[in-house]
Image (cartoon, rainbow, N blue to C red):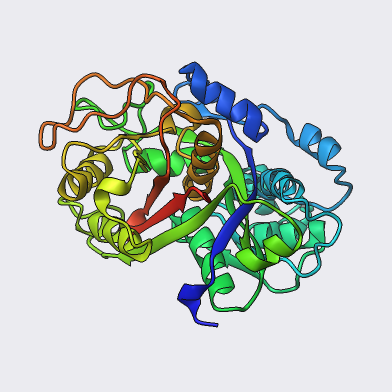
Length: 402
């Protein structure tokens, strides 16, 4: 069947982040208009307590206990992925028949948190280090863990395109369905916090020690976060046969890679504009039919200017948009998946969350995000943006199934 003729439904979602350990609690936090971001605490770090971020309040031992993990050696990123993926599979009503489900997973840091656990020991001649941790270091360890934990289809995929990874995993999963390669895909992303992650972003000089301010004139940098989110994508006829109703349909998606700079986007937002407009074209919509844009909105100087410029060019001044990074922190590869789950939840419950810490618009565009809770909006078509280092830009459009 032609790729364009297959309709991709969203039949299950799951999430864990600083604002909650499931969809219900996460949406409640969004409605509250309160930020859970707090000073990040690390053992033996000169930066401990100095930078604000979004940590999941579950220790390794608690994750092991709740997930019933015994001697599997999964890293924290994989554990968060399993937590969110299990929710999505349960929400879709797919247990216990999971063997035919293909998984597409995304991460940037993989098992990096294990590095700081062993780094100082591995070079000591008289120290015996369990080198099994090396198997958990690479990004693909997350994909392997999700596949093995749930005994999914042996065909499992991993995507790592910086901060657009989670959105690209969803897009790739949709393409697998549209081309007839599979009928059900578990797609999402996960990343975890560590000293190495914080130090890496500090070296880029784009971390704000205060609460981040997406799209504000005086923004300085991002607040890091950790978490995971997964969606179950399902071919329409497959869902109908098992009497499963969709949360929404994935009506459009697009990716551009502008390669303007190794970390930054083009100042005029050319790649972001193209990703958004291409997604709208695929969905057979017009810009004025997009009811809300869940922006990438990292609060960094360059990214917010580029995205704001692209929004202005495509939508003018009449678009409702906002960033949830003030709630979750920037969760890296998980951000596109987390934004997707939160957007789908908003479409179902009927509200738009208030963007926090906004005072003055970016001078070049003058755009103002939604800063007050909006209840009972008509959300028929919502866009989710996710833009990564190197100008890898992805936009997704979720549409009401009605």
